[in-house]
Image: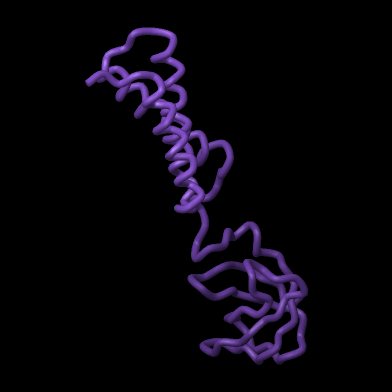
Length: 146
């Protein structure tokens, strides 16, 4: 059986449509790779091995470009948040914090969907004080007085 250009086009469109069902945002790149192969096969007679190699190459380049160009710094996130996005934020302490005791800090605007986060500190700080995020340590925010 010979794979024609329209086979690649239908397969590419199917992968792109499948992205709507599986929201991983990866299938779309393999679908676009199949559409590129469909254009290449329509323009020239390419063997099956070369078609598969071209599909794999184009798809991997598109996936790499997605993470490199459109999602830079995604690998630096820790527990869903990037240090640079949180460090320096100022909030209000709603539960006392002390060394070896956890407290809670409330932010004016939600950070990653939550406006209250557990926090730790190097010194005792009473509730009602304004604090600034100094660092992210695991799933806690390290805070200090403003």
